Figure 1 (cartoon, one colour):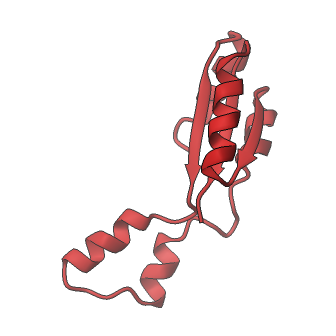
Figure 2 (cartoon, one colour):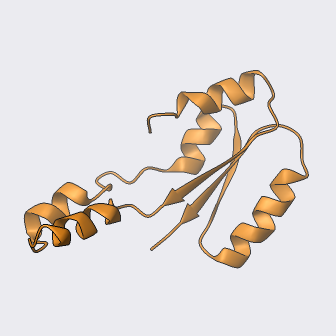
Length: 99
């Protein structure tokens, strides 16, 4: 979310950029950090580490900035889409949903 405005710049300048968002919907790294302190995940940490409510719809956000976008949820789908995106002109965003 901190660099969403970059999509608008890519569209405005017609840049040949492929942006990839790995959308896992949760700050998974923080669960490991929590365990490293000896603490256990509980309802409060689950809520704090969740990136939903509401879910971010990256394809819609990109399109709103003038950038074509698709969502994929498999490595094969990502590889095919990334390959195709690299062979086209203009900005393109791939949301790789990781569950």
